[in-house]
Image (cartoon, rainbow, N blue to C red):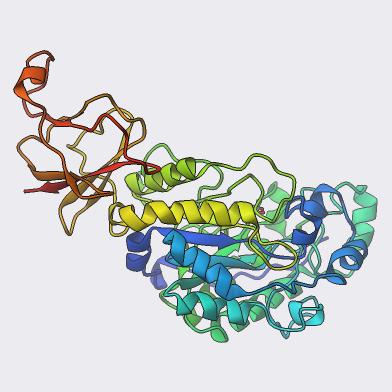
Length: 446
Ligand code: GLC
């Protein structure tokens, strides 16, 4: 399906960049994947995975969507308790359904039993808890009548080339690109200060796409990313934009998903602002039967791991079709919150430790450059002592963070039995690990 592609003079470097100061301070956000797929309860890609045609998907899920227990105040309170400082919600996912009252489509929450814009009260509830608002917006749309069907993803990818070509007759990708600009304009002008825009995602194909044929994948030509990005910058110059528009130089954050980077994320050799996004159990949308739920301890370690490498964590919740966070999600958020209540000092305003401070075995370090405090997160509690190389001449005072109990240097009698390095600080630890998900030592540097 060949459609004309339009390019505009574009130089990302000449446009404003997103302001990331608050983002790298706050470190921890909540991702929310909520849409019709919550009712299938077996992955937000169910329309693709089971090749469900549009009419059938509408019949099953659009017609029956009835989030009668939806109360965003409860969601926001759970996020606030967990220590999350911003949230990013799927205003529209790949299925094409819109949570808000978009004037561009009928495929939206107000036309379901919800009978209202679901986004507005959500944004308000989170803001009332001091949590910043971000929006995820799917570039992919398996419902829109002008979205050119390709052979890679979507419910019709398995059809023959001829059948897909027949379905593509009359589809004009540029009308879809315009639809996106109109929707993004609504989202960025009618919902107050939106701080993050999370586009998802590009899957560049062969050379064909470059000619304006979108039947083998989609990239910046399909989305008209230059125009979309310029529009976003015009409407909200400071907003943080992710890196999935397939537009070199036109992003503020890198967004690794479902895996943890091994070190501070770099691009062309430079350290960049980054945010890992992770799930509790594997899928992003509500999944009833997944049994791979991660433990609170492990989730806390993931958050720490991100900050120790200079990054953020966006932790996902998939609410149910009736509009609730299910018990498993609430349990994890509660547990994370219990840890954050006593340890958020090692997360907010923190980053990777200076390069000359080695990380002790089984630990992660974070560092607050303003307060000059170093945080040692102990993933495996050692017997008796912890050895901190290169720090003996730098540390003024040491304490456990959970209860502010002083930690004292290892006594001479013990010390004489081990070989230690010259500038090593060896601290005595209680025999029992403090009863918290991850114990943290707070070191006040001179
Ligand atoms: C992927 C998936 C999607 C999810 C997103 C979150 O790109 O398509 O379902 O929304 O990742 O990062």
